[in-house]
Every structure is written in C-alpha cells, then in structure tokens.
Length: 116
Length: 425
Ligand SMILES: Cc1cc2nc3c(=O)[nH]c(=O)nc-3n(C[C@H](O)[C@H](O)[C@H](O)COP(=O)(O)OP(=O)(O)OC[C@H]3O[C@@H](n4cnc5c(N)ncnc54)[C@H](O)[C@@H]3O)c2cc1C
Image (cartoon, rainbow over the protein chains, first blue to last red):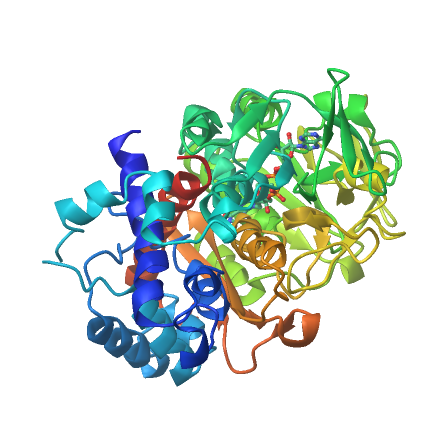
C-alpha cells in the first residue's frame, strides 16, 4: 500500500478506533459499551464525523488536517466557530448547525489522544 | 501540529489490522460476508465502494464502471476558462484495488430488484445483497428542441467532463475577438446549481483578458439562481462589459437551438452565436430508470437516512441521481451521502436500524482564476426526510473583499485535492 493510502486509512480509522475506546459510536450509553461488536457498528457519532473528511482528510492536500489534535483542542475550536463570524472560512456557517452535544461527540471521535 | 505517530500509523496501515484492532467476535460486523455491488465510479460510487470495504472488511465489494479514466467536473470550469490543464481533472479507480475493492470495467445494463442481480455489458450477471447506484446524470435529449446528441459537437454542453470540456475550450480559443458566446442554463433541478454561473464568470474572465471585444450572453430559464448576489456583485465589479445575464422574465429561456446555423431561440428573439454552450435539462443516469428506481420526474426518490430507494428495497441511490433536496447535486453531497450510506448499510447488515445524523454541503465557485465564493448548507435526516437545519448555512459575506475571495479560492483548491484523494486516492 502506498504511503498516501496508509495515511488516509490512518486518518479514517483514527476515528473508528478512538470511538471504540472513548465513546460509543452507536450513540448508546454504558449498557452497550461492553459489547465490542455493537460498538463497531457506525452510529450517529461516526456519521457526524464523516462530514469532516471531505475537506479535512490527511495532511498534504487538506484545508487543515485534523490529525494530531486533542479532544479539548477540537471542541474549543469547533465551539468558537459557532460564534465567530469573521467570514474567511465556511466553518461559522457550518458549525451553527451543530449542537454542543454533537460538537462534543465529534471532538471525542476525531481526537488523537495517542502518543505525541 | 503533530502528525499521527509512527506506531499508530504502522498499526493502522491495513484493513485487516484495523478489523483485528476493533476486537470483533466471529459473529460481528467484520466477519459479515455480504455481496455488495456499486454501480458508477464517480464521486458517489468510488467513495461508497471504499467505505463499504472499510466498514465491512469481509464483505465483497464490486465496483462497476465502464470508463478507464474519470474526468472530474469540479474545477473543469477553470479548464474552460484556460486556467487549468485537463490532465488535472483525470482520475482512475486503480488505487481502490489496494483497499480490497473489485473493479469491473463494464456498463451495468439491467438491474433486477426482485432477483437481486445486475447484468453487465460483458454479458455477466452479478448477484447482490445490497446494491448502491451512483450513476450521475444523463441529458434529456430532445427536451430542448433541436438539442440532441449530435448537436453537442457544434454546441457542447460540457456538463459531463471529458471531450466536451476540451471541445468548448478549443471553440473559445478559436473564436475571433469580437465574437459572441451564448450560454443556456436550465431550470432546476440540475447538476451543480452554481456551476453555470461559475462557468460564465470564468469565460468572461478569459474574454476580458484575451478577447476584449467579445461578449458572453448567459440565457437562463430561471429568474433566480445559486449564490446570485455574490455572482452579480462579481460580474458588476469585474465583467461589466463582458457578461450579460438574462433571466426568464427577460425572455432568457432558450426554447430551440439550430446547431447547423449556430442560432439560439428564445420566446422573443433569435440569437446568432459564435460559440454556444447549451446546458440542457437532465435526469438521473439511464440505469436508474432501467432499475425502476427513478420516478416520473426522472430522478430517484430515496429515504434520507440510508439513501435507500423508496421504490425498490435493497437498492441505495446516491449523488446527482437522487431527489435529496435541500441537499444539492454536488460532488461534496455525493461523497458525504456515500460515506453515510456505507455506514447505514453496515448497520443494516448488523441487524440495526439506520440512525439519524447531521449532513452538510459546501460548494465553492470561482469568480476569477484566483477568487472564489462559497455556499454551505447543514441538513438533518431525522425522521427520514432531509431538511435544512435552521440558522445554519449560507453564503460568503457580500462585503468580504479581495482577501476573503482569495482565501476561499485557496480553500477551494485544497478541498478539490482532499475530496478527490478520499474518493479515488
Ligand atoms: C461544470 C461543473 C462544475 C462542478 N463543480 C462542482 C464543485 O465545485 N463542487 C461540487 O461539489 N460539485 C461540483 N459539480 C457537481 C459534481 O460534478 C457532481 O455533483 C458529482 O459528479 C456527482 O457525483 P455522482 O457520483 O452522482 O455522479 P458522477 O460523478 O457523474 O459519477 C457517475 C459515474 O457513473 C458511471 N455510470 C453511469 N451509468 C453507468 C452504468 N450503467 N454502469 C456503470 N457505470 C455507470 C459514469 O461513467 C460515472 O463515472 C460540478 C459539475 C459541473 C458539471
């Protein structure tokens, strides 16, 4: 596999794998957390995060790559966009459509909490 | 910003490794052995095939596409304006093989929704548990009097990228200074709502720079269009002498063309063109009708959760072919719909119901080679129908000024690189 393909997968799966440990992608509570098979079923959170990768894929082409950010960094940035009308990007117009809960879920899902 | 660590990258370089990491039991999703077939290797189909394999690594995913090379429509207006090479629009599906997708170089000729089979132009028949179709558009030949397939040689539509794009470019280059370029934009719905107006901007930019005595007349079957205030602001500032738009109530609607004489007729007048770009009325790609998933409008009704046809269960339809309004017919929409659909198919395979989420769209349009504007939308599929999320989305600021327009042009270029890498890379 090419390096580029590897990086794409890393970015795409970063979410999938992080989602398994951190929050239930099925949008479910603790009941389902022990059910590994159930957790692998992509749910609301995974689907929310899939909207990001068309612009923010792996580095080297993306508007801004989302690799390497912590949950706190992501949720702070996304929440700020909701009220930031500076107009040089589409992010304010987009984030106005997402609730605080959605932003938390996306940030958890996409966070890179691995070794820096 | 730090990149992903080497360890992490090594661990995640293969789908097999990924499935292993998720710790699935033999009965789980990773072991689901379904036959999944995807028709059409454009933005919707290529993305769907890749993400189906990602979510269902043990299932077989077969992607059917007749063309060796896919020419992307987004950014093809820059080629027509002279600011980009056609080679930058060319993509192949070869890399998808590396993800475990089987590519079949054929045309889907017939779909049997009851028997769950698809018959290909090479005579073979494939069976499927779920079928995903993203066949894009076909033209409604004859819906505009005089405009049939043969007419596209004299009056290109260039609404499917490829030889039509280069033909229109060559015609503009060959035109003498002082010539009249006529464009015709159709009534909604059609592929890429802001596309005709981006194209008009970039043709006007070319004329202003290289053929200053020439002019573009944009004839429109509508009175309003996507990003209208932004486009009209740009035209007034940049192309006052080179671009004239005529809406439907000004007799802008083209009712007939004569490709031999190079004339374009409205209800009011007959216009002699030196170059004519006719964007005709459209419908879902023909295979949609053959499969029974298109309705009397020519487009495909779907449920907004899993993009499953409301006419034939088991068939999912994506992208331009669908009735997904308020989501527009864009590459961005097709790509995101494909990812969401793949996730929902994984849910269905696991015996789960599809789950609602939030979808979005962003379309950039160039108003000159180095300036762009954007429109965004945010949608929910809660309850099964796609609807706008109130208070979100909208246009670039009118008072953005050159710095914002330049920044959006750079963001547009990065978007193109990213989305084509996600679909084809
Ligand atoms: C000038 C122009 C500019 C545009 N700019 C933008 C932009 O800036 N941003 C944006 O988001 N969108 C843009 N678009 C829109 C974008 O191109 C489409 O929305 C997008 O291509 C839709 O993807 P799709 O998968 O539905 O169809 P397509 O990308 O057209 O893919 C359909 C594929 O299906 C194949 N196919 C058809 N029938 C069969 C069959 N029977 N068997 C097998 N294969 C079949 C075709 O060969 C094709 O490869 C633009 C469009 C145009 C015309």
